[in-house]
Image 1 (tube, rainbow, N blue to C red):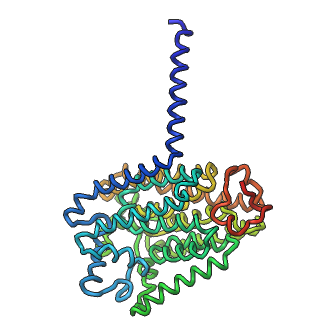
Image 2 (image 1 turned 30 degrees about the vertical axis):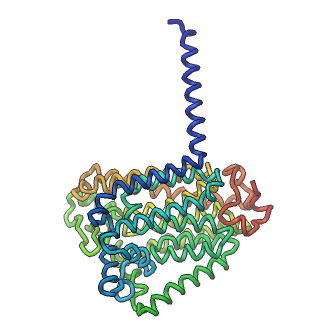
Image 3 (image 1 turned 60 degrees about the horizontal axis):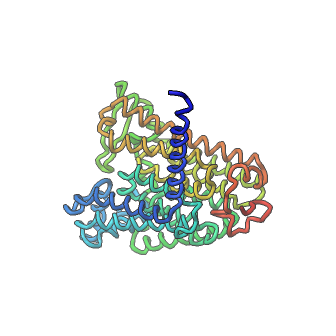
Length: 456
């Protein structure tokens, strides 16, 4: 057949490809499509959990949460107030609230509260659907919720993640509310403190943020102390500090491979009190005793780097510095932590969501990295977790690749912080890195003087 005869077919295929791409682009920018996707995703989650709900059961970490909640409901014993607890005392609210209709409805109420939290986060992120530029971020967030659904639906991070998204979006226009949200989230799980620290260092309204975060913390601690929890309100700090190396942690990777290689003394074992797997072996004593110190040192170095970059840029309120600093600190919390649970990936996703919404293509690298990290995390847990604890080299390789990508992500954030500091004035690089940036997180309210962060 002559080559010329193929041209109409090729043109037809090209036209079809263009038509499909245009249709996909319209769908991604459609408010109706986004709402339908959100509803469909959560209906799918509901269908998955429905048999368990009908049987009055719970999954994931919820058996432990429900046990704590029923101690409150049936016996008036509050963990974190009447006894030491592994979580900050603010976590009592999402743990106890689903028990208001009894133990049998715990999973259902938990799911409904979580769905509401996810809905609010998308509502604020997209400004009730009016901010079309944030739609790619909203779609990415739904994708991450799907990829990490085994933990996104069944861990406390399911609440703190949406809280951080809302706080970051509101930080520029309502810094008091944003600071209160970040502080409240940090009293549920500690990780939002990384975002709060980055905001205090880089923000032009650091005093307002610090004051409202402190007031919120004082209110939470005051309630706990008034309820009799004076001697237990900070117990989560010492409880976490005494933990051993968790199987999935980045720091635990060498000992996992020691166990696979049958190095004498290396093993994977069950911590029955916390329902988690841990690793041990030759040389682990030092890292168990000093791991927290190493993590705090890494956080301090990154905090200094954020402060240096902020001073070099000559003005506070650059959203790139805030978001990159927050991501660097949160990633350091994971990379240098002795604990390494799969839900920790939900510490990073809320920051990346807002980064995509506000900085667009400039945040392709963390978006792609975290997508792969999330997929690998779910492969490890729950899909191939039994193989991992049975010391399968293949499962350990997937985990090792995931942990390596976390280190790569940390390296990217540190490099970006260094680059932002080297650029100097906040105009430098803004037009090149993110030509469509919209004075987000911080710049809208501070006025971020026209010379420093131009409105696009």
